[in-house]
Image (cartoon, rainbow, N blue to C red; front, side, top):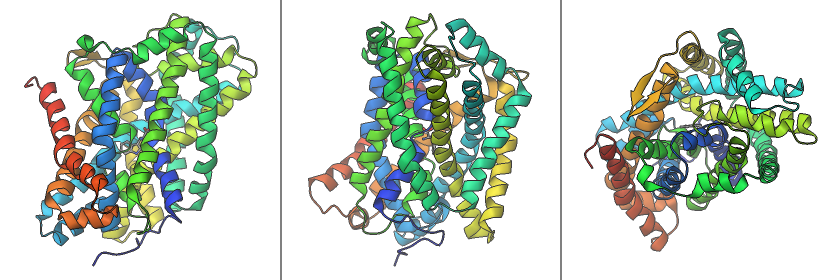
Length: 457
Ligand code: TRP
């Protein structure tokens, strides 16, 4: 008999879950990361592979994570242990939870540093630093921030404290409520920016870059990055969504929620791309500028539009909020595990996880100044040492491998009745489609991308 509630608390209803999971999914991945990796990997074809991965891997795996979480009702480690036992399977399946815990910890370390950049930009926006900004000044403005480790450390610290405070208070209506207002506001501001991009005269060039696929230019590295990003942006493969699923009331349907979350997430990413690339081309910037791309382009738009001071401030505040609602989901599984297995109070557990992530974040801070080093990944040069290493290790490897294991467990090692009952969409074509995707399509797609990356396919 599985539990019907979690000891950590529950979402008030299905809508609250959708909001929280969307809050987790929509974050820096959509607005900061997607445009810059699309830029580095040549645009169009990369975007197509990313969209294919979201639909054939992301959606089925997200459904699997939610159903596992809701059935297990605990942190991913204990959920996997319980479910493996229930299905009379080997206990090693709990390694999915362990891998996720480590991935979440590695990701939060650099995520918090980048969210710190967004925080810094709130104050730059407020101070009028973007007024009449041109491309060159925008670049040096960003360069001066990341060259200064002390400033980065201060913002990183503030963001980590913000994250720990929310998590330590438990996931409750305060957060549900804020996401309800923040997400639509972020969306509207992005639309405004797309409107500005339209006025640059380079909109079509931007669209062309983003949507015209040139598959010949697609490297194996780009394919694996696109797949990795589909996991990253949907918060999949490390148990965050599993954790959120464990707080989902039993009666709520999973498929509809998943599709809503994935659609909103994708829309925000595409809008961000449509706002950014026209500005890149209109201001003589390079699409492959790397992690600074968003911070170098959008301020130009804001600085040259009426009301830019207000809009830019609001925008970066919203970006911080988007990052915040994502960051909490990165540490929630580890915190829940400490509470369950070490009997720790939530506050203490949150502080421990936060402090460890904060310490590791120092490596990322140094990657942009004193400790920068380069290396090659899949034939491409990476210039920001530890930051790039952590990013590649987590997004390109740990998350897809976690997703693969989740798909295999849900598709092959759980009884058909178990997944069917939990998804509660009957035994019709919808359920059979999901089962087909999770058993064959998702694992095969992940495997092919990996084999491709190591040069075997
Ligand atoms: N999805 C978030 C973003 O796009 C980041 C994130 C939050 C995440 N939780 C996660 C990524 C869990 C991987 C796994 O910014």
